[in-house]
Image (cartoon, rainbow, N blue to C red; front, side, top):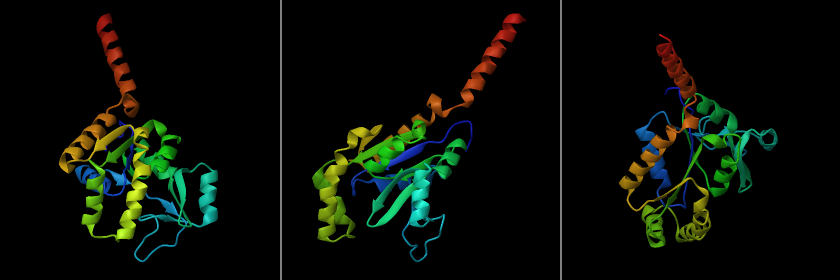
Length: 216
């Protein structure tokens, strides 16, 4: 990955079942330089989880210290444990021209969009084509009980109601079409002027070359 451009902080949000996870996986297959942000958490590691790979494991005091020092892009208390996104690794990736994916809800997206890295944020919300289709997708997974599905459906409307806080919205009525649109969005955002700091020196070089020709 060339460092001639800044990396993007790509946020993908959606209600459960809208296709966000599949789109993120396809995006990473399309460009293997993409990586997911590794979250920090105060919960204990589960079997097979490695520190720094699956999560950055820390205690509550350490986590709150990072928050107080402004070292978290976003954070939340979930079922008694803190989760958050450390800003340091993301900032390093952006400076090196590498894009970082975030799978967060609207609250996390809002915190990141208001963070010190807001100039490099690309936020995308994925909508289902209908509520009936959203329910069908959740049921077809075969992973959740009726009670859990009902809870996800109840939560989905609150998530959908924040659709207009994002840069782009994709209605995922066809996965292949949505993925093509997602690639187009990412490709275009990579070319924004603010993502290409090297252009300033390049244009200065063109100006110098032009002046040399004028003087010769």
